[in-house]
Image (cartoon, rainbow, N blue to C red; front, side, top):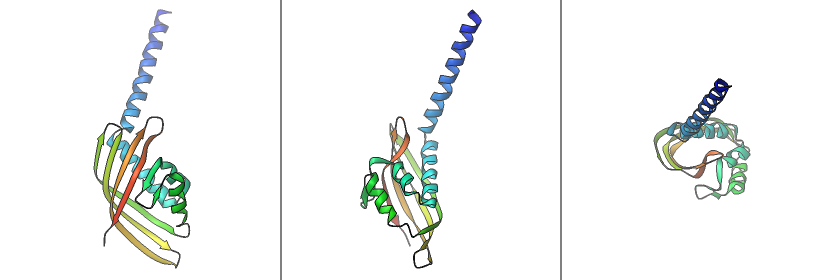
Length: 147
């Protein structure tokens, strides 16, 4: 009986340690990078509902849209566009408490409604907020196209 009690405590502590280290790891630079890669995949599929849910409820897509519904509606304006590729490259990630700032570059290839292929590239800055139950979410994203 004493052995079972000690084994139960050991297992409980092990599970707690693993769960804590997993959540702490996700709150790391690696976790921010993973969230950005998820964003890239959602843009590639143009899943506007999932993209909007990746933002905080009051999130901002530059000066174009604020709030999940507004972001979703803005992105739905591009439903006739086909994203062929979406690649972001992280340059800097800085984390302070529950806020991360990620800066980098992006490249995107899109077929526009007139059946022309457009390649866009530029710089971006994302302010990520850690939501305790949901992980990293975008508070604000700004992009700056370059030629």
